[in-house]
Length: 514
View 1: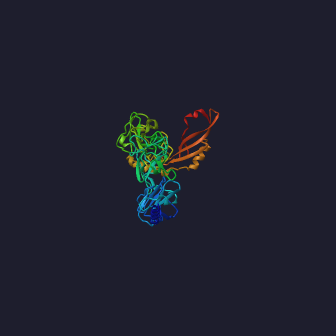
View 2 (view 1 turned 120 degrees about the vertical axis):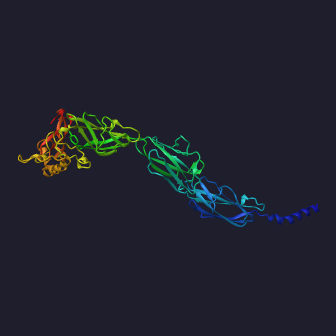
View 3 (view 1 turned 180 degrees about the vertical axis):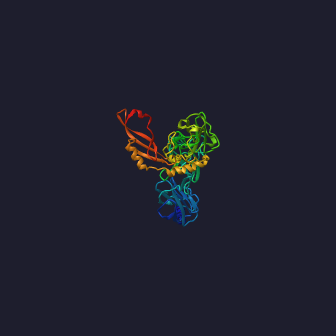
């Protein structure tokens, strides 16, 4: 018994120092600098060990938080990073927060025992407050701010911190969007992430649009930063708005079609016409056929224009807006009426819109009734062409006022030899302009009001070539002798003596009393 006692005592005395020397490893200090900071900041982690044979370092996983080392390589969250340094150690980590909210990130150091295993009970933890990145998508642009119908637009984006993005498009019933990068024949879904597999953090997309509205519409794209596959930061997105052009081609519009020539025109006299249209690729003319009447134009004076058909070929039509001189030769035996139709061509499809045509009706005197060569056809760019109101011609059979003095010769004076018309036209035109006494517009206005041709005068236009005033005014009347109305009055009178040649009223004026 004594022998056994002494044996146990011996073992205790020998092994006790050895047991007391097996102290657990510990982390004596663990700190981070700074303890809070913005997204993308490098945080320095430092720790000291005691009785340790190395350590493990790890940072917890938080959705939307990305970890990188000092060289830019990825640091796996939740994974233990082992180190063999047994005393003082440290590590720098870049923490990126694309979650949209401030994140509290935890980091932990665990010492290793003599066998190289982590002694979890001896570990320490620190916490870091990381602010969110307010602009995780650095660039989001489009190749055009306004689309052109039928032409694609490219959008592009770039980011440094993100791994992936996705695209969300606005829901508008008029607009459909497709992309070669999406399933062929299908439109991109709206109001949600459009792609099942996220897009790369930097890239581009080609988009095609269809807009069924008659108007261009603003359309918004939202680029979503991905925090994880299928999970997105909806707070700090990138937004882009472009105007999507309408694919609806509006109907042609004829703003006006007019002439400054009075009716009737003399055979061979220049008849200026002008027009303005919208939503067309040009216009054509259709001139009615009249017995003995031929028409030409200043576009090609030597070529006769086709009647009762289109005057110009489809590949040589007139511009959408412009002016032109027409000329008619009446070789018949009486006054002929000709109608000139302006027909707009569709902007996109082939053909003409006959429902939008405008018409001018013109009487053409026969060849023998042409006036003396004192009336020169106005040139294409003469002021008469630019006047918005039609300018009348001198009355049938009456010489222009400026020609009276020219045509009156003393009886004893022999008549001069006839000169070619091309010589007489400029000579007599100059004499007419110099010798015609033109009343002022104010005098004409006063005269017409005094004679009760009009109550008010809106416009007074002088055609100095003909010595004629064309006046537009109005006067009071009573429709059915009850309803007060104003009648538009077109008056043509001699610019020298104020003699009224004609007064035109609306066709319905017979229903009024004035």
